[in-house]
Amino acid sequence: MSDALTAADEFLHELQDAEGEFIPPQTVGREVLDWMDFSETGIDPDDIPEPTIWRVLVFPKQPKRMTASGIALPSMAQSVERHLNYIGQVVAMGPIAGKSERFRRPDGTLAWDIKVGDWVIYGRYSGQHVEYQGVELLTVNDDDITMRIKNPAGFRVYL
Image (cartoon, rainbow, N blue to C red; front, side, top):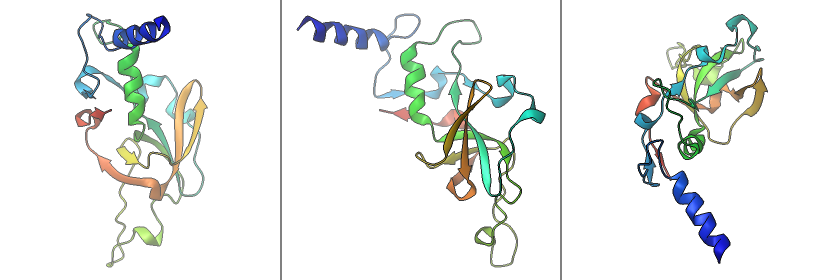
């Protein structure tokens, strides 16, 4: 019984932010976290692996571990954001990504206008996870990208 109480106490401790305030487990808003942009990883843009054929290299959303003022974010807030692993930033594209006939409109123009730097949503279980220079990246097929979003900050995680 004491092990169950200890586990429950640890769980409740994880539901507190850096100031000890309770974070409801139902939702953690994006305003709680500051997001890491791919440019902050330190990887030289000329050194990025090049995807082949129709594949797209995506940097999945990563929460920062500290706020701008130096407050360490609790591990609960960081782990909750791992649930949102279907939002990412395009960092490289294969030579024919988005150029297939299936992406053409009836008038013959391309409907797929994703480019490097865009934030996208892709299938939750799609792609191949790789780690490059200590940074998690994901290669997805171009048709696994379901939409482009302007600002990932507006999304919430619901548990």
